[in-house]
Amino acid sequence: RSGQRGTMPRSELLKEARRRLDLGAPTGRVLGLLLLTIDQGSQLLPRLPLLSMTELNDAIALTLQKQLARNDLLALWQDFAFGLVLERASEIELRHTAEALIE
Image 1 (tube, rainbow, N blue to C red):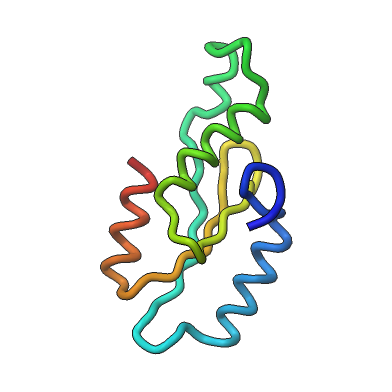
Image 2 (cartoon, one colour; image 1 turned 120 degrees about the horizontal axis):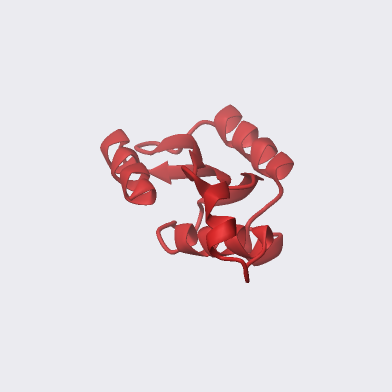
């Protein structure tokens, strides 16, 4: 991961997602591309006047990163939205990771 606070630029995430899809997942692994949006994220700003949009996005990114594996990728897609490329052992494990990220 590169970029600010462990996230990468959206364009780089898309390039890497395309590269991984072209190569195919290693045997016994599945790839997932997720887009997570934070419901009512813009409504947080007035309630947290001391934080900027960048600080809120950084805080959300740090929270997401705690649940990611070493080879997972995270990019700020737009304010309060994040793109992720995940690799897991099964579709069930991928689904469990996605569910954990949205909780």
